[in-house]
Length: 442
Ligand code: NAD
View 1 (cartoon, rainbow, N blue to C red):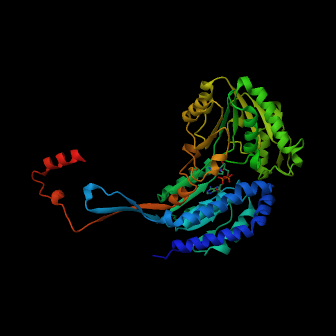
View 2: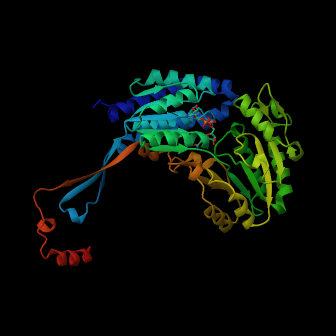
View 3: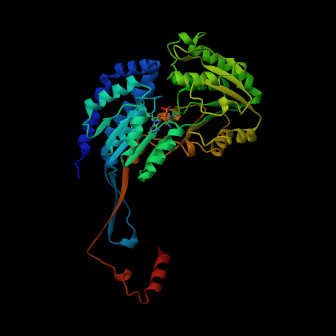
């Protein structure tokens, strides 16, 4: 069996990674700017800070995460001691998307390596600057036997999937997720699938409307709406809908000015193909704010659509861009009908200062994770599992759960030899009565 780095060696390597990332922060910011105009503030907030804080907590906790968990033994096995051993799976494949190309590539790599696995990472081909920077950083920090980066598109990923891995961690679209699951099934390889979907965001008449508008505008247009947990569409109680649209407009203007194309704070769309798809979703007759776009710079203005048709293209597919349809609803059974049309989303949000109303709505619908009175921010707490359900994914990570994702929990019972109760051995004779009586007391 090949020897793997010890916990101490892994901690040292992760410290080196932390150091190298701190030296390269400007280069990371530049790579993301070159790839899709991501503002430096957003890169620090949603990419480098998340990776470095994950590294710090992994380094701090790795020894305790990796150590055996002792559990109470069963009285049936007396005398014994029982424990759970954390065994790395072996070879891990990580395939990551373009939208948060730095953190969504590195978080699973850090966890898989920390857990004692060797890792191959296939980052997105749509962010070539970030992907090649990640490749440089990985080869500077890790032994290639431990972590290696394979750059390229779906062809490279498909070739990798022909190999046998012990765990596959995939982040990306539902369509590709299904292909990953099929490929993994050939070898019964366990998978985590971090996928997407249409995330509803409900605003009731009991919400603090001004603050809700401000928080929604931030979370929707962060990364130009190219966020898996961004609110996809708004469901606003009809009695406050027009007032709320006016507030959303005011917040968009406050954030990005009257000419958002000139704002330094709005990322661009990742590719021409995505730009064309998104522009195709903007129905000019429904635009109540924004709607402008520029093909050359792959710009799309933060756009609000007053949407009434649940069958329109923008209401059928995951938007994944700076377009926000606002749909009215009259009562909670309307919410059931609208949300029930879609697969289980990755996130769901509700804005309401009425605690029983917001709790009721949140418990009514299945979804990966979400917030009351905010959007996106549940992602920031590493003590909360992050993952989807149904079509939005399977498995979850962050914090200790990331480590746990990449280890098999091996059960071990050590029996004492100083005593051997003969009850279980044949001939069973008349022991059954004794057994029944004894089991009653357990
Ligand atoms: P994608 O599925 O197109 O690509 C993701 C990765 O899979 C890329 O590295 C790509 O090269 C690779 N890939 C593409 N075709 C493949 C194939 N046939 N076999 C194997 N690998 C293949 O997704 P994307 O466009 O990069 O990302 C956007 C999607 O990801 C959205 O749906 C979004 O909701 C989702 N997403 C989910 C999360 C999450 O944490 N749940 C995070 C970010 C993005």
